[in-house]
Amino acid sequence: MPGGTDQTLRPFLWRAENLYPDTEIVSRTHEGIERYTYEEYSDRTAQLAHALTDAGMGEGDRIATFCWNHHRHFETYFGIPTLGAQLHTINPLLPDEHIQFIVENAADKAIFVDPSLAEKLAGAYDADSFDSVEQFVIMGDSVPDLPFDAVAYESFIEGHDTEYDWPVVDEDQPAGMCYTSGTTGKPKGVEYTQQMLWGHTMATMTPMGLGIEDDDVVMPVVPMFHVNAWGMPFSTTAAGAKHVYPGPSPEPEDLAQLIEEEGVTITAGVPTVWLGLQEYMQAGNDVDLSELETVIIGGSAAPKAMIEWFDGHGVSVTHAWGMTEMAPIGSVAHLKSGLAEELTYEEQIDRRAKQGLIVPGLEFKVIDDDGNEVPWNGEDFGELYVRGPWVTQEYFERPEANENDFEGNWLKTGDVVTVDEDGYIKIVDRAKDVIKSGGEWISSLELENAIMANDHVAEAAVVGVPHERWQERPVAFIVPTEGADPDALAEELREQISEDYPKWWLPDDFIQIDEVPKTATGKFSKKDLREEYADEDLVEGQVPEEAAPDEE
Ligand code: ADP
Image (cartoon, rainbow, N blue to C red):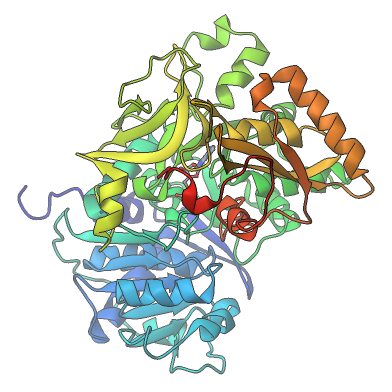
C-alpha cells in the first residue's frame, strides 16, 4: 500500500484527538486520581515522542515498560509505536532471572518504570543483562535512589512541543512485544506488528468481539503488562470511549469506587479479580453496579457461578479466550442469534461458560492425536489450531520453539478443546496437562473443577504421573479449607468422582498440600508442582520420568 495508508495505530489516535477531544482519561496513581482529556493525552503523547527522539530513539528501537495501569503507561502505548518504535511491556511479577533474560533478549534501549516497581527492577538489575538500556525513566515527577541513573517522566517530557509530525510507518513494522509468562519454560517473545494490532483492534471493537462504543467507560483491570491489557487501550481509543485505569495493585474497594464514581460500563480481568469483588460485596459492602453493563472475563475459565452471580446483579459477563501469541483475543462466548429463545437459562449459561465463538477474522481447526480433524459434536477432544492476521507465526529468536508450536501458518495453541454443533469452543485442558491413560484422554481441568466444587477444598491440581501399564495415571493435589479432615475429605471426593465420572478417571491418590504453586500471572503452575514431586513415588506402578514416553 502507498505510504501513510497502511494498517497502523496512528489513525486511531488521530480520530480520538479530533472527534473526541473532551472525552476523559482517568487514572488512579500513587499520587491519587488524575484526569484529563484526549486533547491533553495527545499533547503529552507528542511530548513523549519528542523526548524519545531527542534521546536518540526512534524507528525500530525496542522500548520497555515496567508499569501498572495508568495514564502515563497509556501515553507510551501510542507514543512509542506511532514513532515507529516498539512498545515492549514487561511483566514485573516475573522472577528476577526471567526479567534479566527478557531485557537482554529484547535488547531494550529504554525502560519506563513505576515508582512502586523501581525497587523490584533494581533487584533484578545487573549491568550485563541490562547492557542495551541507555535510559531509565521513572513514571512520576521524582527519582528514588537506584543502582542506575534515571530521569523522572514529567521532566523527561516537560517543555517539548505538543505537536509531532508523526512519521509514515510501515504496517509490517513491529509495534509491540510481550513475552509469554513461562508456564511452559523460558519466556518466549511475541512481536506484534502495526498491522496485527490494527486488525486485533478492529475485530475486538465489533459486537461479536468486545463491542466497545463511544459512550462506554472502559476500565481494564487486566494489567497493561499482560498482552496490552487485552488490547483495550487501543480499542477504547479507536472507539473514542472514556478510559479508566485502576493503577497499582487495586483492591476490590478501589475497583468498586472507580466503577461507581466514574460510571464504568465495561471492565475486564481474570476471574480472581472478580472473586475479590464478589467477596467484598458479600461481606456487606454495598456497591452500586447499576451503570456497569459488561464484565469481560478471560485468562482462565469463568466459573458458571460467577456468570450467574453477575447476572443476578444485572451485569452481563462476556467470557473471552486468548493467548499472548494472538494479541490476545481469539474467541468470545456471545450467544448466537436465536439461541437466547431456543435455550433454557441453564443451557445458555453452559454456552456462555465455554470459551466461545472464534472472533471475526480468525479461523480454527481441532486436531486429534492421529492428525485428523475432530467432528463438532461437543465431545471429541483435540488440540486447537488457529490462524489469522493477528496470530503470530513465530517466536522472537526461538527456532526450536517455532518448530513445535507452528504448523504452516497455523499456531498450535496447546489447548485441548471440544467444539459443539453451534461452533462453541470449550477448553477441556492444556495439551501438556491432559492425562493419557490407557489410550484415552482424561481432562485434568475437569477433575480439578469437580474437586474444587467440594466446599472443603480451597484449591486442587491434578497431574498425570508416568505409569508402567497405563502410560499415565492422575494424581490429585488438594488444599483443604481450614478445619477439614483430610482423610474423610479424600474419601468423600473418591465417592463424588466415582459417581460422576468413568472409573478410570478416578485419581490414584489425593495428596494434601499447603498451596498450589502459581505462575506470575496467577495461574496454577503444574510444571512447578511436577518438579517438586518428580522424585517421589506417588502411585503404584509409577515409572521414573526419564523412562516415560515423551509427551511433548
Ligand atoms: P501462559 O498462560 O502460557 O503464560 P497466556 O497468558 O498467553 O500465557 O495464556 C494463554 C492460555 O491461558 C491459553 O492458552 C489458555 O490455556 C488459558 N486461557 C486463556 N483464556 C482462557 C479462558 N477464558 N478459559 C480457560 N483458559 C483460558
